Length: 299
Length: 299
Image (cartoon, rainbow over all chains, first blue to last red; front, top):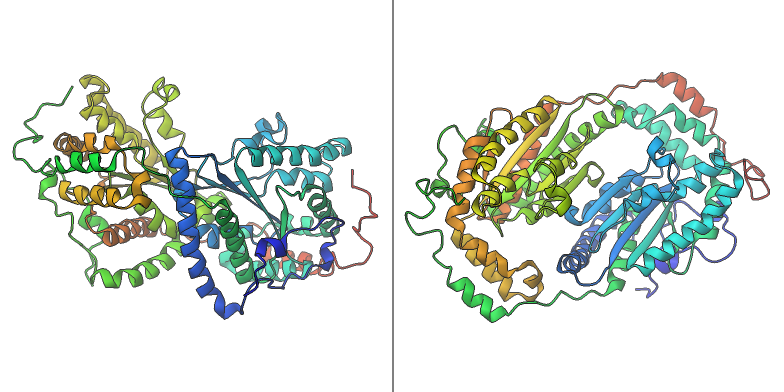
């Protein structure tokens, strides 16, 4: 078993990023093939359950400020939704909040581009998942020229400063770019057209965006280069194979949660005294006559 | 196989409710015993996945206004959290939002008791889960006399009117009372004290509330009687056995989603024309030179 973590294997290195050099169907870090994935996911589920509960417990007990933000970005059909269903779906929904960022509303447009993102951040103990994110403002924002070049330029630094603040504030930021090729996308869009139960997922505008693939690729490369930092690196997740993508994002989450090395909160009460108090209530609610409907409301 | 649904078996009937007459360890509607539960859950997971996706698809396609609200109420340790983890955890988190209602904040107290609940309602296609709810305002509100008796009295009718509005608005309301006995609770609170990894779930105030068990039972009985309606019935879920409770709530959800009988949204575009448009983009992004870093930003 290699001692290298998946985080180390997938993180974007310093220097120019050339997405055409990434194999979307690679399976780095996974020992085995597709048939081994269900067992790997079951094992991960147990690990995630333990680590997420420790995080949640710390939040509930008011111990520390740790929280997690999982950012999912990728071209249409790269599988942001499927990743949420299969990877985030392994988590306890009590501690998870999913936010999908669509085209900004008029109200959102009245504010800085980070405003709507700040409102969706996790509180201590929680895991927030962003289906698209503030990165759209340097992706479609750049490709479609939704802001002038100086503003787009400003945003890269604004994003890294924002993420630095998050990390300083106890938030672990896990940014996953779900990497597919134009051929992967072609196959998946065709599959949607071929299956009437998938038509609702297809939008003619997807083809318009697809025609801008080279510009999106460039916009992603710039974003990955400029906003992959030591405190909040980007991970390029090969997403041509869905089973690998789901495992990889779950594994990245598990590694980041594990790195927090959280202890269970200790009791802030006297355990023995509480045992005695509890014992004294052993027969409560079982006595006849108390609290039956003849009792008047307390007030 | 009985043709009776679990919804029919667990719903509160008209007339006085006597919670002491309910067996918390009963397993109505479940064919088999604990060892059969994992298979039953796996089967339910597939059913839920299909039905939730149809709901989500309808919401995404803007077809109809169907949505679901699952309300979980019960005494401490009845397992609201465990039910969310195990039953709601079977759902796709993209379409789920969990809200835990704690003691009202000062801002919430400035508004009518339904204000904070309205802000947490599901939008079309979504499933909202309430961990506690507006019912607290006639439960702890009544037991602890947090409002005067006339206001408590007003709230029962306000709740049924509110829920009627929700149902008229396309929202399916599934209200589950997780029923345990004082003995069940005693055993679970003791288990929390015995396990240091569970200490964070224990609060000395739990014992104070426990001492008021008879009054809580009465408050629940009144709420179940007055607010179980034809359009939004209450279900009493025996919760002395956790495995049954998890299955029962998932089954109730599945039955209610199934009753919506949702079709997949039909394409609002010309499928054949889209196939041709897509085919025309077969080589996009693979041509050399386009969109490489030498290309200036679009703007």
